[in-house]
Image (cartoon, rainbow, N blue to C red; front, side, top):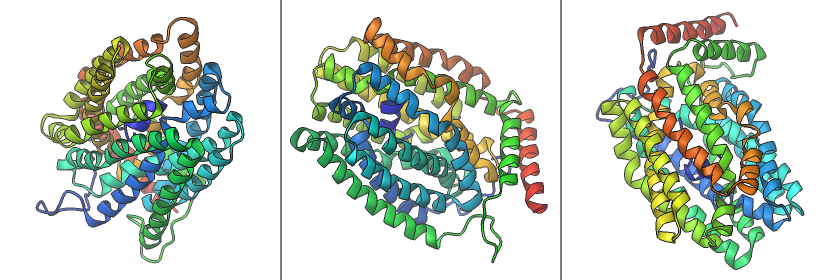
Length: 443
């Protein structure tokens, strides 16, 4: 899901036992700490958006062909398979902000590796370090927002965060494309690294002042393998129970596999088939970002008022329509329409998915749970980029995108019929939380 999910500002994703930190109904939707947190996330991800959508072209400039690009993204998915869940557990154990700060330090080193890479094979080192960053930051992002919001308006908060967050896709890709066209990839990466370093310094300062929710006074947070086993066991129980959590994982797996087929090929397709420059590709991403900025907050409001299920189903439908338009597009205007449409689809899905997931997970399992869902069924999607590259080369450049479009359309079926919180779900949530609390008491 590389190119699509980076543009998604992703990235995407009831609290039966929640105790929201904000109880005043007149309190602002975004708390002061959440606002500062959002500033650091915007800075860091503007830096990421400057290069992530152009990574296939960077590999191509270093000598990789289409098949090798597909192989690269296949191998690059291996590390997050384990680290997303592990990163979520670290977030649950040490705290959201400390986990994000640790991941950011790894991110600074990853930029250095990307800048110094002499051939496309060496880019693996930078992306390996970046996988560590994403694994520590990603699960903490959704979990931290959940802990800084009330359940009654949580989707709205996610939508508002996504609205501000779309600055990333409006500013990052066009700026990155401009620097690439004028000065080359290396200069663009150095500018992106500088922006990311500023965000990292801010995150480290925030983490030094943070206290992990639920941590007793004078008690130092620590990592214990026994706690990881308990968390994974509790999450596994929710996943195999056959309820909402089960179907969240299944639909996310379908989406992950299908988008992995085509995501890394988008810039290659736009450059080779549509004959676009890097800056034009960046402008398309900006259009996607504008669509998200206009629709994320209303989409969150829709999910709160009418239910997450409706918003997610509409999101899948819009993504499918956008991909069919993308396949048929012959002019920049039509590509812009497809990007705007998929931006609306992402806006509908992102706050609703994250709100639903935060409600299905007890607070002490949110980091691990977000990590699990963000990694998706990674084992099954692992060969997808390489398969997509083969389909692109041997059958038709549009084939991977066609498969993604149909998969998004079919995913609506389980969303409509299975994304319903039942009494059985509530019992499973209580059971999962009780097992974690009991393990904490026995420490």
